[in-house]
Length: 105
Image (cartoon, rainbow, N blue to C red; front, top):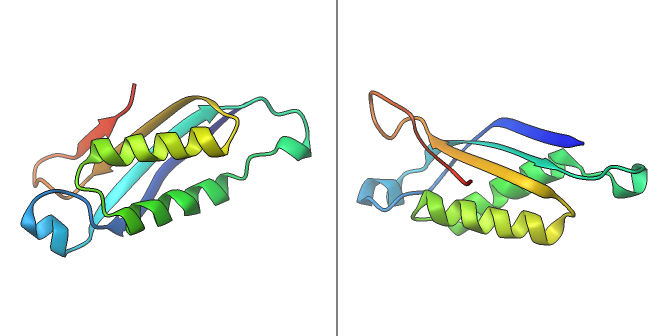
């Protein structure tokens, strides 16, 4: 099976610039991963994962998108039996003429 969590949006402190450390900004997270579904006993609750990612981002107040992705990646691999995790974090309002994103590979 493959789970997709797309366009998970919330506000948090993220960035290294002074104004980014003072005021929350919108982030959008997209992720996907594979897991071996057998029955209800190994079901992965995607709503739980979504809530946990938001809590992590709000609590940690990462300076860099890179650090956020690495932390979330380690957390998900440690907490769930998943494979081929892909994470993309976007900051849609940091620049006026584009959306800035970072994706693991």
